[in-house]
Length: 444
Image (cartoon, rainbow, N blue to C red; front, side, top):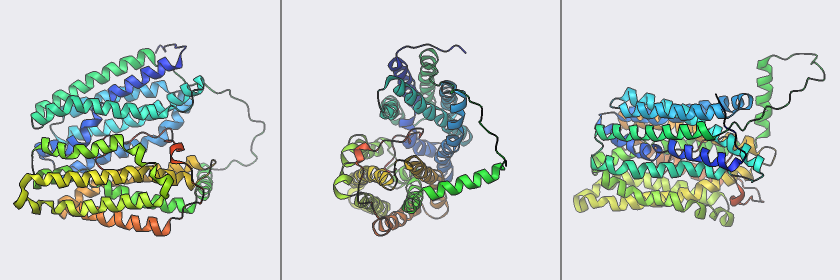
């Protein structure tokens, strides 16, 4: 395959970002669209939960395999493969008038994300180092949000006006597949291979005793666990539990509102809009709060507010007798308050990870943190679907409340902050970590 030659790294970087943006168009629709579309094609809560979990599971499984492979084989082929698989995922989703097609679409999308975003971060790092331009990783995540926003602007009006008719769903994902094809062509033509094979040197001596691979893995695991602070392991346990509980609401939240309050998807989208605005514009501002009051209070308050919202929302339908569908106004208020809480809590939590580690262990510490977060995102949606289907539609809400309030209490009483803080503004997203789906739906 011919590789383009580009003397200016910023030209290649711009082409890569354009391809990423075009590949991200479906993301703005899927998080809120899957629960609504599932009602139209009669999927139950567990099936919807699996559609969320399989995406997170595939990105989690791809992470340890793609990184080392890119360091041996280069970046470009993985980036192009991710774009190609994204086209197939859009085609599967376009056919998605049944659970099986949606499942394969989401599975392929998860594999694509694992290839695409990890290679995009590696390409960005290579180009930034070549140009001596510093950290350019934020622009990669910006392309995800921008593509998701553009995709929602294009797709949401069509899907809402047609009440998520299957033909409208198919048409939109065929359009997304076409745009993704344009992105693949741009990447093929303009994104070069940025990886350079390191010089190989012969070993100076041969080891006297060759250890087995199992012994090496055991020793490496022991060294890894000892290098990560105990407080960070406790924080990771909190993150696993709270991420599981919050992700458990993803397949249930929109369906609960549409089954108990209103089945008008336009009204539900309008109720969600204020919280989406908070996530889009206030996270950087609210993230600075932890520099003033410490890391623990914003995290604990965010968990408490989210848990309170989960406890109240299942009971809002009691107000339907007096105010009818106007009950969506207090619902929008609770979603907005929850969004503000987590917009302050998430940067504080990430800054706390940095505070609990040092320069030598920060990469491993963030690896533990992101793995804990991803684990909850894998387990949560399926667990929430089972709770909603087999116990009660409101069960995931109360489960979320109990877990988040317990997490808030443990955060305040058991986590001890180091005296010296690292400014939240200096904490960067770690490379080789694919961003979460957009929008987050009021969670992490």
